[in-house]
Amino acid sequence: MREIRFRGKRISDNKWVYGYFLVNQFGEYTICDKTFSAAVIPETVGQYIGLPDKNNKEIYGGDILKFDIMGDMEKYNPLKALLVIVEYQNASWGFRRLYPELVVEEDREWCSFWRSDDEEIWDEEYFEIIGNQFENPELLKNK
Image (cartoon, rainbow, N blue to C red; front, side):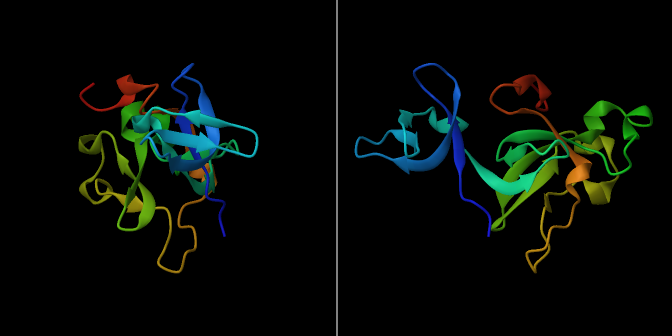
């Protein structure tokens, strides 16, 4: 079982906070833990997907990852071909290419991190967090 945890950018100082997510009685999005409760910017809330990247950093929804199954694809393909964004679809966490036109057609669709038996499909060594959609909008297509 994976730990259910969220992150969001605190309204007061724009710093990331991590913990449980709730919407309080005033409709504010809040991340809290045993020691704090902080109002966060709703658009920045992302859930931990239960997997680390190759540097053992936790992957959250909205993260932008470098996806490299060969370990040296950068010297053969433009960096943009390697970028994916983490999204929740079809009741599962997965990723989609930010620049699908740079890869073969069968690699353009959204892809789950897991098989139907809840076993991880992709090795964590294939992924490296390089940013997220909130702090690095320049990495997103058409931005």
